[in-house]
Length: 431
Image (cartoon, rainbow, N blue to C red):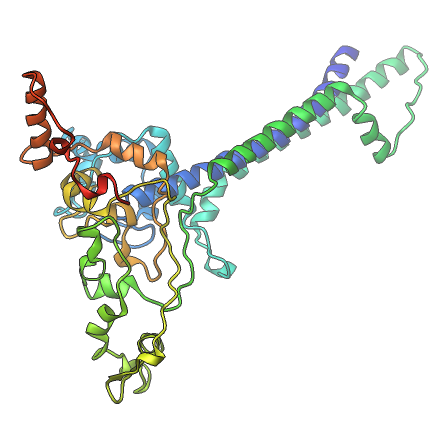
């Protein structure tokens, strides 16, 4: 009996530290899953789905709450094959929008899909300043399993403590019946008890080990995310709404960002492009006959007098836009190469609809953004993964035809110059 008591006395302190570590790991893992799921969701799902409203596909939060994880794993991984297998639930799900087939994502691992589901359940994190009343009820649902795990661990600790107390009482009764005098241990106060705990070498080793693991995890995660600005949404000097212009008014991306289709840079449109419309469009009906304050900012920057319809160049001043997407100087990216040459391949890989511009592949559903934000991580890993997965169109492609011709000449022993392989293209040397 005394041996059991000694074992439990030794175990419950270690179990307490293990509980703290487990809680820390569970919280860290949960947070990481949601963050990863948010990134994958924004990259692959937002062209058709939103969390809380119907788009091309249904709102996902009610679906994820209603369907089993087993079904969702199969559906997201390869919905067409799942439907073709004759599964009744899958066939029924396909009837939601018969005109739009669910895209297959065979490259997603079960863990990645589970991360997406965790993000959908948790919902979008609240922005700064948003009151607690606006919190989505999905947050409470997603925390239920986490609270259950913590409760089980805490209950286990309580059971260990109660067992230790019960065994101690039984030992006292046995000793009393045997006539053995019981010497009561001197009770130490809480501070002395903590001090004595830190004199125990095993406890100190376990504490330091837990501390190193926790700090190492947070440090690694912090360093891994350094320079990653997914979700970055700066305040702009003019509140330009992409949702209004690209979404409601269906203005083509190329109209403003013409450089994306013919040069390395997409380019920020000049205010002259804005004035093509806003000489007439002034939104006076919304502001009691006055010009919209945001449109007036354009006029002020152009030195334009709306009443006289004249320009005063002495009043011109640049609009100090805040850059949202910013690659390092050592990274070369050509918009036209991706938007024009690789358009079909990117569309297939990202599952874009015919009416959606290829820009959505990297910049996300811009037509739903009231204020533009960085949609994709734009990390080297993110680019490399896309380059590994995207299948190229080599048929009827002038570039690859040139490469094949050069390859045939090499096999014949003929001379090949850099010019034959695109060595005279401007982008080969000039940034």
